[in-house]
Length: 420
Image 1 (cartoon, rainbow, N blue to C red):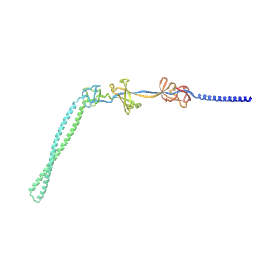
Image 2 (image 1 turned 30 degrees about the vertical axis):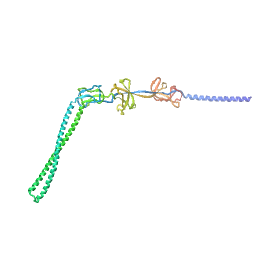
Image 3 (image 1 turned 180 degrees about the horizontal axis):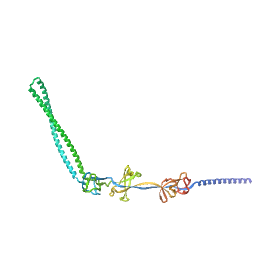
Image 4 (image 1 turned 120 degrees about the horizontal axis):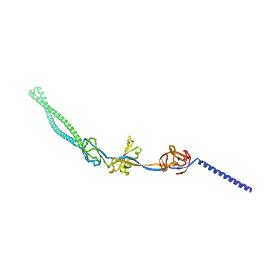
């Protein structure tokens, strides 16, 4: 009995000891956990709200005509008739204005008379040359005969000269042979002299012919110029379109280079704008855009980028852009218009309560992967209904602390309770 009681007491004692040890271990664990939590700040975090947006980019310019021309005078003369007014519709080739052509007509008539004289002189000269050529040809034929007679007379003289030396023939016979030789030589000499004269005359006539030909060419060129000048007295339209400006009136004296009329084709208009180098990338040839013309109110018309001049202006550092627009009876050159392009982007917002200010510095606390708070300097934008736009310094994946900011500094260890 005593042994049994002693054994029971021992079991109870051991159990109490075990219970005491177990309690002791549990209390030690709680105390360790409580000690660890004391070093960390329990915080709530949020991730920035991402907002994708599209806003219009607008730039102004002036409407111009692809086909536009300024008609200028190419001669001096008095304007005797103007057949159109500003706003008149014209067709290609239509007569628009007349300049006094009396002086050009007189000049042309004088050149025509001179051409007639030169033509007559050339015909007369050709007749003389033909006659001279015929005489030269006949004389050349006669010279062959005369030379043959001279050669025969010379041979006869040589033969009779030997006979005379041997006193076979008389002096009279020898003198007769010598006389015939002298006559043959005289005929040949006379023929050769005449031939030289004729060839000299032919040379002179050839030179005169060349001079007449040159004068005729000059006259021909002058007549062509006079005819062109005469055509300049009538100003015609080079295109289908409208008269947009008239610079002269009937009775005015037109001068070479003076502007008379301005025309344009209303069916081929474009908008010309100048964009700075930072925005030039948005204007790609072939792209569709919207064009707003003030005269049309807020109604947009379609446009198509036709050309981006690849060279920037050295003064303004801008690029010229040409945008084709559809034809319309109300669209004229000189109108003010705007081209509108959609520009997209992203921005992020955080609650106003997350902002921390240190003097002029604005920032937030961000929790990194090691659950350590780090101070991040940010650049803010607009404030909308309790949210601040963050322009730089944050990403959409950052975890931003929104409470207990007064208990946190850079490097503080935190416990993230929840994300809002």
